[in-house]
Amino acid sequence: MRVSTAIFVWAVTALTACGAPSSPATAPEALPAASPAVAANAEVTGTARKGALISLLPAAGEAPLPEGPAVMDQYGKRFVPDMLYARVGQPVEFRNTEDMGHNVTVNRRDTGAGIFSVETDPQQKHIHTFDRVGQYDVTCSLHPGMQATVVATRSPMSTTAGDDGRFTLSGVPAGDYTLSVTFEGRTVDQAVAVKGPRTEVKVSP
Image (tube, rainbow, N blue to C red; front, side):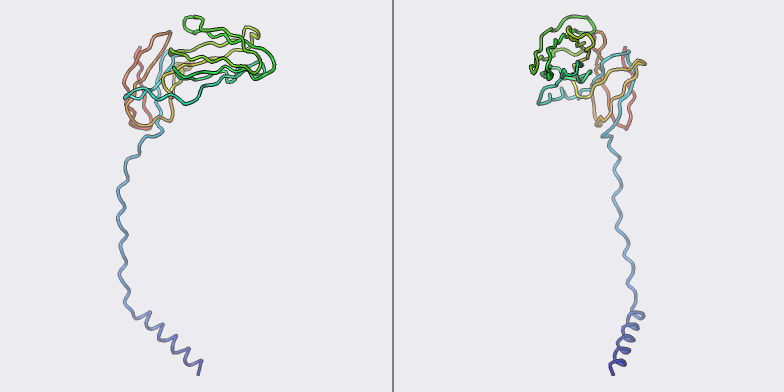
């Protein structure tokens, strides 16, 4: 009796499944058209004079300053880092974190003009704020092998042209900018529109 009932139930279920009209397949909803990719990490490249300082500034105005200071340390008879990018108007701390005295002498590279020369005792620091765009040579008069460079810029998007004059600025969001080129104390600005993944710039002489 139980076996017959089970067979009957299975037969009715199978007939219902086979005989029931299948419902029409629902068409997938159309996907919205993809928007054009925004060049959030574009590159700006070009050629300038060897060693020229290149910066991109928002066309709308100056980029805000970082909250804290830029730091160049002295230890192991070295300046660390040996090249420091700092913003004009941002304090720079020249620290001495080792157990010997040092000296920090800073000269403007294009003219050789002295900016300052101070002794830095162990665990002490000297703070200076650069007020002019340019590259500055940093040395220690007590240890001639200690050499470094501070690059003072108006923008966090800055670099220096290589020996072949080529430069690349990466991670540039799309938008309108002012390209600022500083060489031998002279600065030339020109407008640049960043729209695609790579923008080649023809730098004015």
